[in-house]
Length: 124
Image (cartoon, rainbow, N blue to C red; front, side):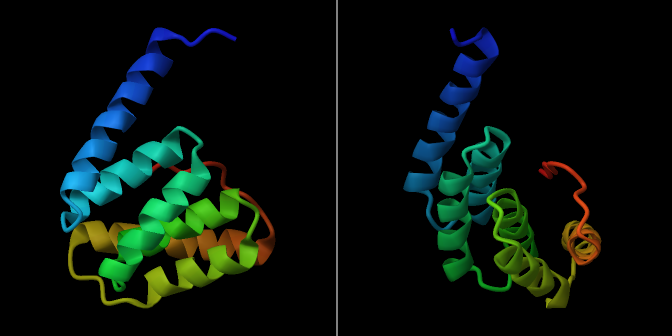
């Protein structure tokens, strides 16, 4: 199947973000943007690696734990998904953005507990 113009642009954007992430390993926002771009492109294993690496640098970052939860959920690892969502839910949320990710993590915990799926969630 031939790539569409949108597919080509998406791949260029991801390649650009990959370069930025590699040259700015201590910049949380760039690491997250790169991870979310991979997630949105259904490149879950690559996104998992980006967010897992980021979680070592920023272990208490709610967005990273939430992203890992979604990735593990999409990879079918419910136990790791639940653990990541619970981590996100347990951290001290200071900003509105952190509270948003924490609230979404709580919703995902509820879905996992009920065995339902809320579908793919892309939060940027």
